[in-house]
Length: 291
Image 1: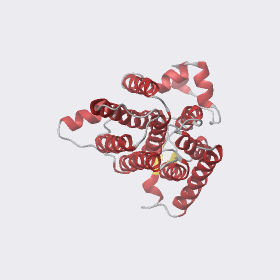
Image 2: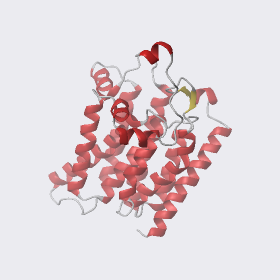
Image 3: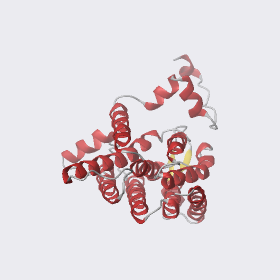
Image 4: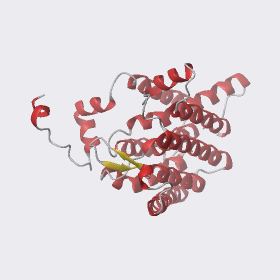
């Protein structure tokens, strides 16, 4: 893929994100209240950033993914993650507030289909289709069993990445910064089109996200993670894909017991990067300051 095409992919993603966000703000489907949530400060924040970012990622992928199979794989992964994430954003049962992958799968095992479980199943299915369509770097192993195993591993990587970036979307700018850092080394690979789409969409969304007027929500965070996972599938050799999958699975399992926010706050370098561009935390007063 030529450098020019990568630049075009980033620009297309950036412009499409801005246009989609402006259009949604002008006439939000269902009204503005449908998309308003309360952030970690207790202030109102809009979920409209999520579908706008997903639209930007799709535009960037369609322009710059390169090749019919790579384009289809990226589009399917991003569209599936964004759509099922949006269902969870807008239709989540707030009376039960089932949390975590274990919680949603546990509810499903007891016959209760939460929107979170539906999202897991839907993103998993779209990731499997994307992995089956994608032409991974270096080609697939010739034996049918090895080829099937490779497809399943790639699908797990795409779905796991979508879930992991949703876990990061707990503070303004965090998921967008992490996505940009992860996308940068992939720009020069066969997955560079998807990586550039991530960089373009993130560059447009980051200002409102850091200002705490917008948030990615499940729709945007899942779509970002799926795009990055697909970029790895398209651009990395098998050993690297398996290594990334191991990291994604490991972090997901750790997240069930450990708070990423607490780890970041206790690690100076991570804390500084995480806080860059964000409003300072509100000072604690009274009983809170004494603890």
